[in-house]
Amino acid sequence: MGIRINVNARQDYSYLFQSMTTSRGNSLGNLNFLSDYASIKNGSYGKLMKAYYAKDAADKAASTGKDTETKKKSISTAADSAKTLSEIEKAADTMKESADSLLVKGSKSVFQKKNVKTTDETGKTTISEEYDTDAIYKAVSGFVTDYNDLLSKTSAASSKNLQSKADTLAAVTSANAKLLSRVGITVNSDSSLSLDEEAFKKSDMGTVKNLFGTTGAYGYKVSAQASMIDYTAAKESTRSNTYTANGTYSNVYSAGNILNSFF
Image: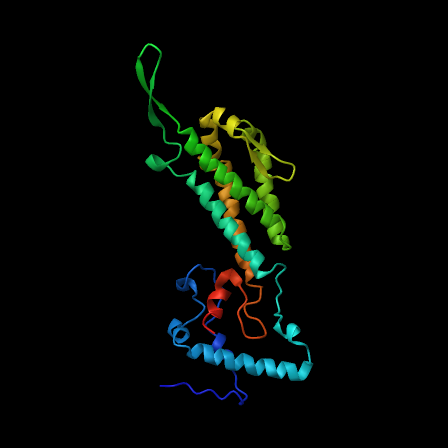
């Protein structure tokens, strides 16, 4: 059955938005604010949306006389743009993944010792269990990079809630500065981290494990703070605009680009 649309009639289109909620996601499966994906797929939903926004834009143009660029602006009560919030959330997710990878236990742990065969000058061979220093360095280096990225993005946010979370993240790091220095990691004046590869590889890997691979230790706390930043950015995004006045979606958690492709 076809859908008929009378764009000239004064109609209440509010039912179009009854199934919408703000949701984060990287795939269509996570766009749970659209109750019927099929209606998007076949274009009927898009036609209704276009009709609604075309009528709305015409009414606003007639009553306010604002120029085209002004009409395209959307209203947002969030302190940061949807793009900024999306970048912070992605950085938080990446940070959490890096931290959690160092917390893995058992045979898949980066701190799992391996048998290493060595032969001395007399030809005598010995086998001993040792840490894989290169693998541990690679994992911690990724942690440092992701930490600096998250701290930078969150600290630059305008939201006081996010700034507070950035301060907490920095405080967690500051509290562990002495231990970090023992494994070649320096806490800079801006609370960012610097990793000295040579000093790190010469340090005690047991200390590194205590810092990054132990529940309740530094790495664990950073993971927890990343989760809090992720949550705060998601909450803040609900105050950000979902659609613009010209009928296209803003890029809240990158969903806007996906939705605009349908219309």
